[in-house]
Length: 196
Image 1: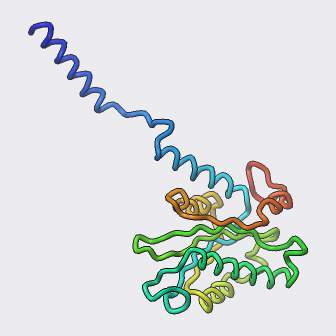
Image 2: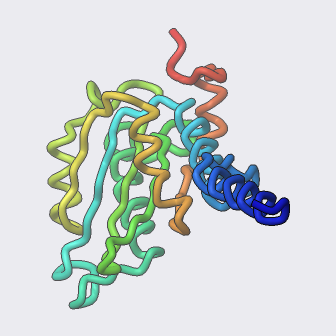
Image 3: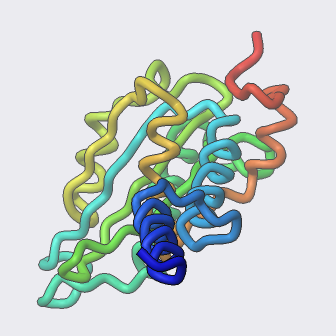
């Protein structure tokens, strides 16, 4: 082989080797940025104690258009109404003036069909699972809006990750106004959870 052919063969060999070598993730790639954003949301939400993990859907016959479309603002208003009634039941009419009330994070998710549903994390100074009936509040949502699933989370960061996975894909999340206050009241630190 002539030296130019040999050089070309070696060059092709290097190219093939480079093609099959694992490519390092670029520090500012869209995927890594999305992952970092979701990780930040999970870390933030994971600091709070969440008593309920909820999924709320909307019945087309109640509060959506015939094709099942619910405007995001209408969906968030429905959640605020749910939370307000829950607070009034648990803490009385003047719950806000007394600094009471549940804290929440609500994420909007659209199916591929475009139909909206919500995932919510709801917590309180005291455990909601001992002070409120999940069955009663599922029935409340059913009477007013559609089907609800309300569960006690088994793993705090897991439900936070589930709620935030669509936020990083252009979804929305709404946080209750009292999250900062609740952070101080519960004495939350970097590890999260209730302190006793």
